[in-house]
Image (spheres, rainbow, N blue to C red):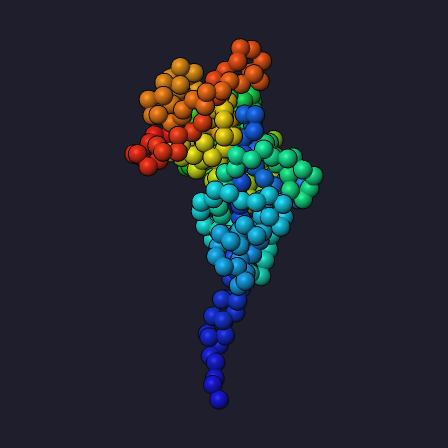
Length: 312
């Protein structure tokens, strides 16, 4: 008879306790508004376990997103794998590894009723939208509370202040729109987001404004936003979000919506022209509220001709 040692039994139990979830960060930018596809009243990203019946990770993700939202996935790329032991806020008997994907769609979101709904991503991160200047929430709430948090431990005060200034662009530091994840994780560490307040029940902490999400889904969303903000600077992925024909102003507004900052109109158009990223369709748009504007389309051939810059 085959005997199993206690160590073998524990190892088997550990393996059984590990499972993989697939999570989608699906982004669109209709009318200059960056939105993300969510379920469960905006608290959760589309997700589900990777099952033996799935042909691949991507096919499993596509199945779950379509089942939960009715929205088919187009372009997707792997984003990040989350496997931290304490990544879930809820106690669980199993270790969950989450494999996240970033997806972009140019389809017009329908804003359908639950279970699938599109949410403006600045609802989750109101401090990230600098298109009209720095949001008041930073100077009025975030910076004072981060300074208070830094003062709580004198031996770590200077390091905490330096990290906060670098993340949120104060004390003569420049705002870096790419540091979305770093800002969220700093606020979590300081106990200033609702997910951290839940994890530290009874501490009397209060969260800064911002729509909360289940588990660490807001952290995953922050990772996706940061990745996309970085990528639009060196790859023309923004065109994955654009309709087949668009004006240059619509293209600029989409870039600004994703980056959360404004860009210089003439410099932006000069870069687009220098890179030969678009070509005229020969048609005009009358939906500008003023003079008709030329319609353009993305030159797909540019991807075969050479490596191209994004919108930096």
